[in-house]
Image 1: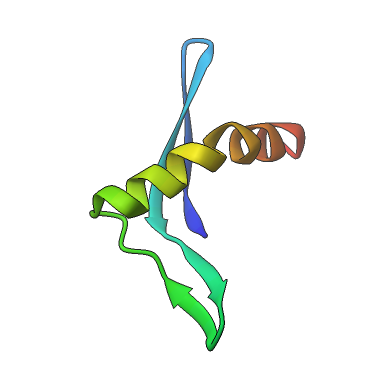
Image 2: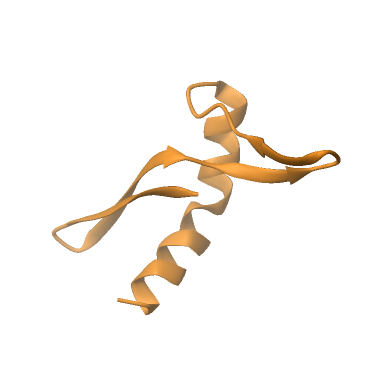
Length: 56
């Protein structure tokens, strides 16, 4: 996963550039423009923001 964490006032926004997941044949790139890809990213968004915020 690569991208940027943007802070606007007191809220955070993730701007994903690339995301991959471990598939049965190795790493598979997630299509960030697809509805499925966006759904996956939104499901993990809170955890990613918390992780990145705790390391800054």
